[in-house]
Length: 194
Image (cartoon, rainbow, N blue to C red; front, side, top):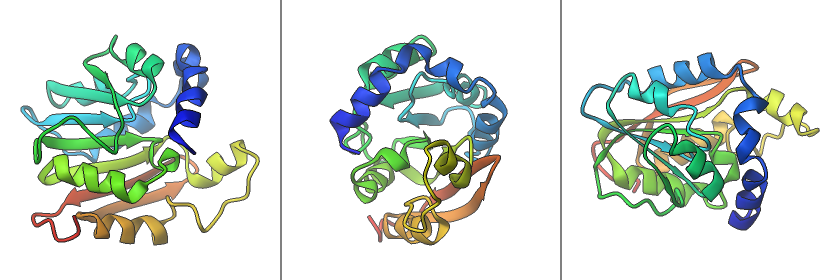
């Protein structure tokens, strides 16, 4: 999906997005727990949408910022904490400053997943965790969209694992079942893939 299409899709839904799937809280909490946050670390909610995860992130660290491409989404998120209008592929943060990154529902909307994962690696501190998350698994999401589950899906384990490894991330956990999708990786100490 092109950036302008993504922006238009989410702009039309920003006001009612939180009402669409109101029972996602426990799945989000589980994803946040995998980030192993602690006080003092900066947590980035990349593609933050309305900022639903920001309060959960703040339970583990007081330094949380959201970034979303869609102005209406970032505006809603700013009601829950600092949120910037921005592109995940060009983040306004210095190198090695972010302690954890949550990217909920983001990876499937990226035109350049490799470039964005490299950008995440650039801003992440060594050892930082990245959680690529969706509150339902790939099969459920495909069914919701009236599609068949595709082995070409970027979120498929055989596709996302080598992509993470090639962009400076060490995969540590993978789950893709009806209840949620979660690929967790740790920022490699060296930037060999970045």
